[in-house]
Length: 496
Image 1: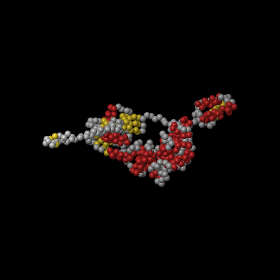
Image 2: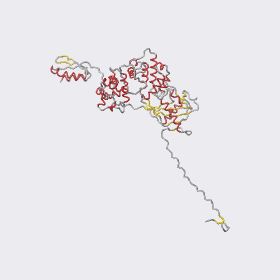
Image 3: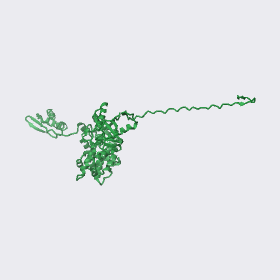
Image 4: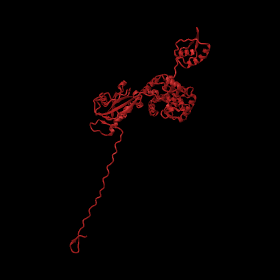
C-alpha cells in the first residue's frame, strides 16, 4: 500500500524524489498495476518502464522524466470515431461515378494541357471561397473568356480585374489572383505539387491541395466547410476540433488512393448536396454505413454549433450625386480607413461612416458631411428606409440620399460615370444597390417642390373602386295636341 502511495505522488509531481521500504512480495504485486496507471494518466503518460533503485532499508521507485505529448482536446479524443478509409472511399467513389453536378471547371477525363486545367481550377477554387456555385458559374465563364491563360491575366489591369469581379465580394481574392499570375508568368517552373503551390501568392493549404490532387493526382486531402460537416458526422467530432483533426480524417480517404482528386471532389459534393447543414438526406448518403452519427441517430447534433459573437452594427450615409444619367464616384482609397465600408481599391459613392446605431440628427449630419466634402450642399431626396448590407461580421444600415445637380463643375475629386456603365468600374455591390434605390425614388411620383423625403417601400397603393354608373333616365316625349274637328253643325267640337 505504501508503494501505491509513492506511485500516486510521483504521478502528481514527477520531479520529486520518493523512497520507501517494501517487501519483495508487495513489489511484484503492486508495480505492474502502477505501471499501467502511469501509462494512461499523469504527465508521465506513455511511459513504458520504471526503475527500482535499492537504498538502505528499502527500494526507491525512479520514474522517467515527464513526456511532452500533443493530444487532441479531451472532448475530441473521447468522441472521434475514425472511419474505415478504404471502405468509405469505395462507396464514395461509386456514388460519385454514378452522377454529380456538371461545372465548367470540372473535367470528366484528364486534360492533356494540365497547365490550362490547373489555371481554371485555381480560378474556380478562389471564386468558390465563401460563395455559392450558382453565383460563381457566370463569373468564371466571363473570367476565362477574358483571361484564358495565366500569361493573359498577368498582363491585365487591376481596375479591369476588379470590375469583372464586382458583385462577388471579398475583393482581396481577385487581387491575389492577379499577383499570383504575375508571379507564375515570370517563374521558370510551373507548380505541380501542394508544397509548390503554397509558394504562390495568395494560395493557402486548401487551394494548393485542391489543385495538386485534382489536376496532378497528388494524394493529399482537402478541407473546406463541406468536408468538415461530413466528417463531423462520420466521426462524431465534438466542439472546437483542431484543424489537424480534420486534415487527419480527410487523409484517411486519400491515403493509398489512385483517384485522390475524385475523392476530394466527391467529399465536397456530398457536403454541398446530400450532407447539408439543415436537412441532410441520410437515406441517399453513400457513407451512411460508415457514419457514427447516423448509427446513433444523432446526425442533427453535428456539427456542434459554436455560438458566434454578435455582428457589429455600423451606419453609412451615402449620397447619390446625379447629373442627368451619370452619378459621381469617389476614386479608390489606398487607405482603407477612409472608406465608409473599409474597402480597398474600389470605386465608391460619397459617404460617411458612423459606428453603432446613430439617431436621426447624426444621420442628417452624416449625409450633409458626405456632400460637403465634394462641393456645395444641395437639397436632396432621402429614402426613409435604410438598405441592409453585410460584409463578413459587420451589418451596415445604409442611408441613401439622392441629389440632382445641373452643373457638375463645383464638385471635385469625383468621376462622373453613366449608370449603365457602373458594371465596367470596380465597384462594390452596395453602390449598385444605392443607385437603384435612388432610381426607385424617381419611379414613384414627382415630388412637390421643397419635399425632401419619400419612402419607397413595396406596399401596394389601396385599390379605389370606380364610381357607380349614373342611372339611365328615360324621357317620354309629350303626346301631340288633338286638334278640333268640324262638326255637322258647322262649329268646331272636341271629340270625346
